[in-house]
Image 1 (cartoon, rainbow, N blue to C red):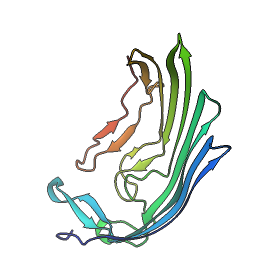
Image 2 (cartoon, rainbow, N blue to C red):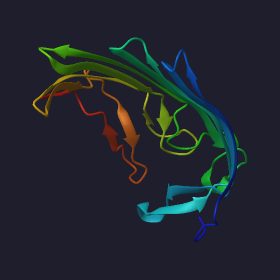
Image 3 (spheres, rainbow, N blue to C red):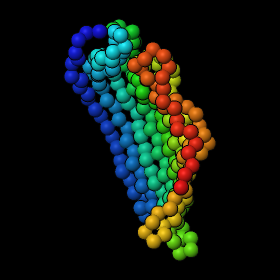
Length: 204
């Protein structure tokens, strides 16, 4: 591994749209993109566990993303979104034992999210119930998809609240299904050190 690294450069192409449909009750933002990346910097573990930044040749990132909001009626709103990303090396990098086609670190293939919000009045006070679900695809934190896999989990959050005399009172349950998964794996140490999803958390 050499000393220092060169500046990276990208060439980006993107086509997107922002749409308002059904008397503005449906909002849609969508985009497709491609980025060609030269001399991309990658952090790797060098001698004695020290982390250094090196240039990893060339890579390409391409995919699409979409976010939408639909006001079904005056009380119920739905949010739906997702993204797909394919990001990989386009040349061999012998210094990193990496080959063309290897996926870059920390880049899940896809993710999706869904949210439901119901507004109503309870005893004349503004109240709501909300649910959010998010899924993150699997990925690796080391180039070439080696080591332990992170991601590949879904998380469900629920909440309900009411406004009383300028105070907001909320009851919430995060990670309601108590999913257990790795969210990130350390690349600094040779052993398996990682961050996990916070377990089911309920509060007021």
